[in-house]
Image (cartoon, rainbow, N blue to C red):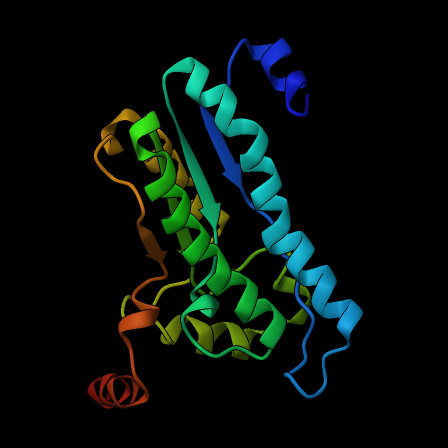
Length: 190
């Protein structure tokens, strides 16, 4: 059976953090079928298969917490139709799994990281792009992987025992901003 290694090593599975993501910059007219399939396999199918093998072990243990990492790109247009679509699928998958397995004592939530600075984004960043990304959120600050990690720790903990099916933006308020709000904030600085 898949997943036996974790059970053999730790005795049970209590937490599954599905933190995966690749991207191909292409719109629906440009995307190659093999690139579409690869993004969907890594970003969505891997979560389905991980959960498929973890959930039975969680049920045996009396419950658990699954945290799926999506993205704010799953709720807003991005420069990659395959990535945006896959991250939106994770939100739907999370809600479906939460409904299917809540009575098994398994909570399923997802985190939607915002414009964080990290190894995946750093190679294409300069100081000007970083500044613009900071200003895109209501808090006007830059996030890191630690911001996402602490949200995952909370969702894995007993303190979140009554939370399931949630898509939690961890984005410095990026999703609540509009271009109009951003202009108004910039004008207030002067």
